Length: 520
Image (cartoon, rainbow, N blue to C red; front, side, top):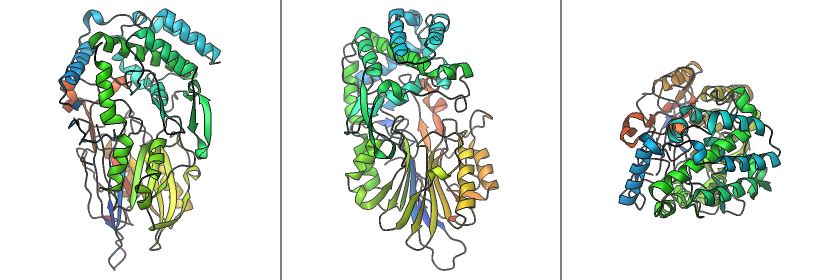
């Protein structure tokens, strides 16, 4: 599975965008053409200074949401030649959409005994709100049906109760270059998950007894308990969660995450007890374990000639890998001083060697408007031709509601603090073709905003809402339950949207060419 996009803009510039979603290659051994594959878009934009009479210097750039946090081989619907895989996924779809008598209460899968064990370790960890979660378990969760009332409950997805703990603990990149993986169906965990009891013992130990050594702020190595990696789910970012739920969101998400994992274990061992783990291992080898290598391959070959690479959702392991490859001889790799080592998704900017100098990070000087650590990265850089730039890379929230506030903050900072510098901003804006006021940022509204600010984009003043830069469809084997769709509905309900942009001041650049690439 790979989703890449390219778009760009720059002064006399070629700009390229590689889009949001998984960075697995569509040219893998299995000839997997992920339905997410069309999200691997690439744009090339040529911009030039209109006020300069002599031939302008050309600059090229790409923007790519690499989806480094995607470590789940089952997350997206893909085309696969393996009949056993296809049967498993068809059976999963049938189980989810027509569960019948298999739709048992949650406490028949994640038992009261397991929940009490969970409460004990949460209390021992000093977490507040455990008794409130116990009350919710007894009154709200334990008797829900596992499919109709949990897996397919869109509100749980909107609240991020299952997806947030998965984001932090699915696959933790360690300081020594290896990974620690939560015992679950939806990653490349290699332990025995052939029964719910085996899973529970391994899960509880991982979440509440294991410690990991990771690289934190400034690359400083630190050791911390995995349980301390969970953080509150903020209502300001996820409006579906109530203030009361936010206050107890750490133990609440631990409970929801455990229930979610238990349901998946139960389902897979019901449907394919003899081969699902072997199928997953094969997919992990082809798709996940070589993802960083394949991603670096693309950046250091296909796009070795560009001048700027804006990257989003980049894992620390990619940074380590890139510094050991020839890409480090082609580009200077700039990343935030305050790396997000918990979610492990960061925005980066790669600059062509010997083309830029006097590079300084300015992220902390930009007003925060609620974005998470690592999502925004801002630097100043001087081109060898004397042109001064303010460069930014940003990954928006799922619904794109922070995109305009973040662009406003960066633009205001540019005008007040660096009025002589030329702003070029590569982003996964997470904008949508169909307006949904108050819930999602539509692309037409986004374009109106940047036009009103005197800005432009690689798609011009009026971007076509149907000029999609991502196309993917999630299965039910992933924790963002509100985004799961049936295989038969992937073309209708899949995420096909115009999300990726390169933004610049309208009076400074002219777009000469924009392209998208979904081949890598």
